[in-house]
Image (cartoon, rainbow, N blue to C red; front, top):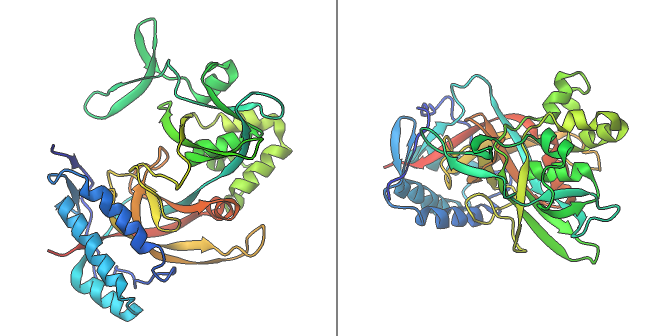
Length: 365
């Protein structure tokens, strides 16, 4: 089988533009993440190639990069030695170079929410499985398109507003949640754990979208003058909706995208590669620009969480691996960092919307 992913031609970073490499997690969890990426890469056809910086990159080179970097970090090199070894043995590519805006680094996590398998108060807000009305067919040119059939014609699938206002997905409910915004958060995060009334846990996982574009309600709140950009977090959005219930429909329906779920086995969080994600090391990105399984250096900042509100910021400078993707991640200027599961991960992920830079590392041949 022959597979090719086409990426824009990207310039190799010069010595002046290459950052001073360091790892703020002191390499913790990196080897585990690289092993997961290697499992994925070794299962690809040997003919798989990616185009990076105008150069055809084989899957073997991505494997060589991950394997050699595992050996490098096993030595726990000092910062000076780390930079010397990278300069000597690796080509560094600035992924988001040449785009109209700087890289936006956001965060996502694996939430826990209360729910029920039966609709009964207070569990009134459904998550849906993939409905029978949804149709997927090959798109003209390449890829797939999502829609439905109406009098024998293929038309776009309903928007979020149409689905919710018309109750169009009856009989496709998977589980009911206590809170409407909890359901919306799961649509954004793509997976989570449902805590049932008897205390048992069940995991839901992204199955399919309605094919409509994702639009950020945080950006909408800023653009419409309701909030300041610096104040936008998941918690602040939730608080705003609680204080303005008459605006909930208008705000949530701004995002036309709607996600359908399936039950998944309990256990580690799984990304789009079908592999376990590593908190702080796995990123989601557009695979047309970030080859899945590749090694990336991320340079941004992260919240310093000292209380329920979070106070201050500190550098985020670490090596990560591309192990996931998402409908909101389009182009080279977007990266989503996986923070793990639970409340603390949610607080950190909810505050992340920072400028940054991403550098792809490739073992020199």
